Image (cartoon, rainbow, N blue to C red; front, side):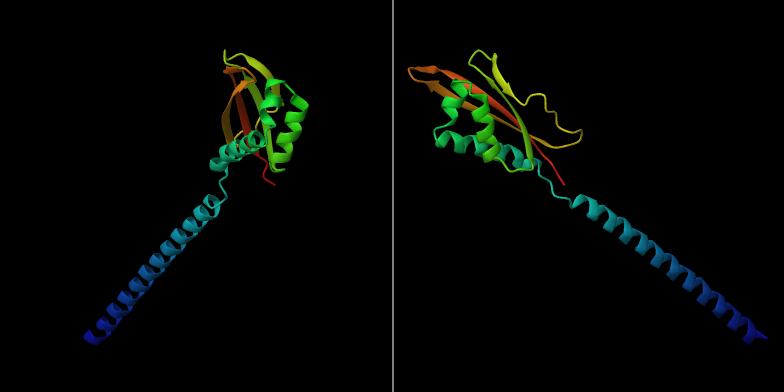
Length: 150
């Protein structure tokens, strides 16, 4: 009879070991699923860092071309809006305001546009000094940009 008891104990130990292996395997599978779920949603492209650079580069290219200073100091808003639309990619929406050296707003373009909730917004402040003999006067261009995804 001792032999029958020994076989029963061995079967119980194998059953317990099998349950332990199943539990460990399920735990590993659940952890892998959670890790894949997190990686899938955190690997979406993040654009917020380059929006300010895109805005600055667009204003800089207009300034180097010699267009920006005359458009801003003469308040040629339509021409400025067209120039910025040409310089910026199609999936970027923007709004702009210009202040003088006393910090009073000279004009605004598309200021009624508001970025969607939760969207990343890039902000660029660009300074232009002097027009003609008045080099002490400057304008601050405040450009806000956000990207349309889709």
